[in-house]
Length: 408
Image (tube, rainbow, N blue to C red):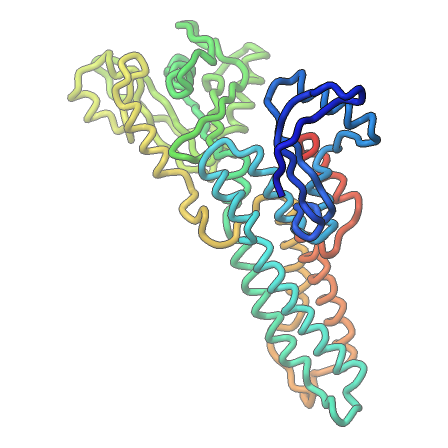
């Protein structure tokens, strides 16, 4: 219910005129009676009203307190609460879409279904353990239980083979610019960033440490990393920079390996130091220095000039197509290491269950197995519950909500 009100201080003087909203507990975001004051945006008015409310015994909310109360009241689960934090932090459209999908249950719903299925399977095995001698219960329920567990196990295996797409959408895809000195790495970084981030000179070895900028490329978050030129060097500081460059190449989603154009010479594309599982593109730079027919014969995936802008749009399109995120927005996304660890632990527990379905009359069958299988199911159920908060420890809640902005 909204009401136009005049807000006054303790002496009766008007502070501001605004709108007061009342939310009864059943319909409030936190499950408690709540009120909101919508006033003009002047910070003096906000501070004055806050001071007056404090005099009445109210206090400022702690980090994530409203969302935490919503979780405790059952208005949302823990995965959805984390989605609220991701939505607040989203900087690109893809991050926003992923956060909204998780907020509306893209992760919570299947986790709840898997957990319910395993609870049913556990109930069947417990029936065999405790009530198989009862005439109206019978025995052999574990067979159906193992079939159910096998279905969930297959689903978790598929989920965990996602190449970490959800986490990379949340944290940013890592694109590393690498190559020999004076190949134009820092110049390209500045060009793509649209500002002077890196110092650019003609002196080889100018860049000695990592430089990172965050970009929005086609809606995808990209962490673009400039690295030291790779070459043999006797300089101890430069050696450290080169070692860090090699490390960055090893963890990159995409590597842009640069060689500068030299009039009359075809680029000698060298092998990249170290190893990488990411995609590698050979980029010929400074093409404003050579004739166009030499560009065509360069062996590069794309040729660019940061000076004239030639090829830059093509490079951006190349990056858009190379970002390994085709499955973003389709189905479940694991967005946090906490989720992945819980899913992995649940799968480990289910992997201990037999794949083949025994018959209770099988000579290999031992009724004592049921107790162990029940414990494995309990472990998997607990781990899945940790994701949504159905099985949670207070220290997990503390770590999650401490990362929220104040009061959210």
